[in-house]
Structures are given as structure tokens and as C-alpha cells.
Length: 167
Figure (tube, rainbow, N blue to C red):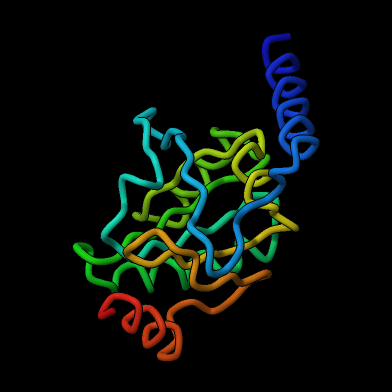
């Protein structure tokens, strides 16, 4: 019952924000909307905690086949990038923690996994589907937006991210 009430409240909140004219504000060239959420350990995080780093923000779900396909390349990218200047976060969207924990364990993922279990952050970001990825620069500005899966550890992607790191 609590979960149903929470989902209803989340839906009403999303409609209220849209009715107030704010709508999605995650647009390339604009500041990334800040948000608070929890990781799989229950620790609270904010996107603003990562200012000063280039941040790879990926919305995904275990039930999304293209999301599952791109995860190994995300792990390889994460291992190649400098941890002091780059962060990768994967926000599981409309998914359940037990399924996410199992998936993360099966693949041996080591990058941070944050919760968007009820699509509150996705709604604010104007998420159109899964997977969706944004690159946020060191100042918190959205520089790139990718809709759909990608092979993330290519030389072109590493070059793009390195360019933002060096700015």
C-alpha cells in the first residue's frame, strides 16, 4: 500500500511540475538539474556532489535489452577513465533493487548504481526511453545527450570525454 501511495504521489508531483510550466529542463547547454537519490548500499548522493568531474549519467533498467547490451562497454569505459576527473553513474529506472543487485553482481559492475526506481529523476529530465545517457561537464552543464544504446569504450567516446576533462 505504501508503494502504491508513493507512486501516486510521484505521478502527481510530475504532473504538478509540468502544470507549473517547469517541464523537463535537461537540455544540452543548460545546467543539469540537481537531484538526490540513494545507491544500492543506501547511501544518499546528489549530482552536485560530483561537480568538478565530468559525469556520465546513464538511465537504464534490467528489463531493457539494449541497456543490458551496453553495460559491458560502460564497465570497460569506467575502467579506462581517470577516477579523479571522471565519474559514471547508472540510474536504474522503473526497476527493482533485487533485480538490479543480481544483474550488477552477474556482470561484475563496479561503477556507481543509483536509484530512480519510481522515475522521478527521469521525469524531471524528460526521459524519452531507455537507455538514455547524458554527459555533464565539470561545471555541471549538460554537454551531450544520447538516446539509445552505444558501444561506450570506443576511441571516439574516450576522445570526447577527454576533451571535456581537459577543458
